[in-house]
Amino acid sequence: MITVSATDLLRVIDATLVSKVEPSLGDVNGRSALATVRHLLNFVRVRIEREGAMLIADDAALRRLLGQMAEYHRSAGDSEAAAVVTAALETAPTCDATASLDDLTLEARALREALHLALARLQGLRAERGDDPAYQAIRAQIRAHIVREIEAEGELVGPAFFGRGPRR
Image 1 (tube, rainbow, N blue to C red):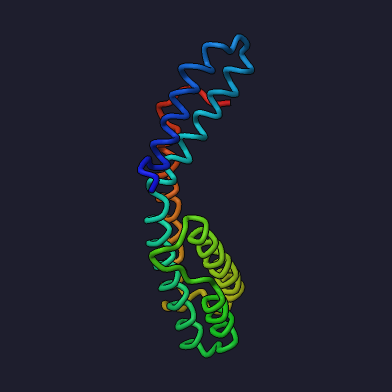
Image 2: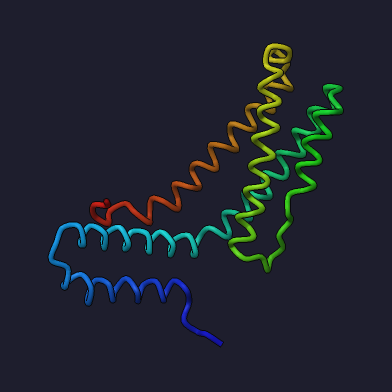
């Protein structure tokens, strides 16, 4: 059994780059490339540490939101739109607790694509349903979800890059 974590390995790689490679670099381009590689290694480390839990939570929230969108369409009498959202939701892969980060990412992509398609359909109904409180409510839920996604991405990007010097 390997007892060294992936994040520990990334830290060792980074330390080796700093102690062995960086001193041998004599030109600006080489040092710049090294700085970029170090930033990317740190980004991978932060993602390994945090992204799985974030994707699990986001995927669950997306499934709930897509279910609410399908229900909105059903209640508005648009069974075709409800069927499209439901089909997209059903065809998205479903990961369990043993899923890899790559599997969770595939699930997230499929669910986000379903959200994109469902949102495009809703936007096409703005002129017809824009004054309907139920329409406004589902659109507000979508906006709130997108804000949460952007904030979650910031929780990955911020610690990975901020305060670590210039990048290429």
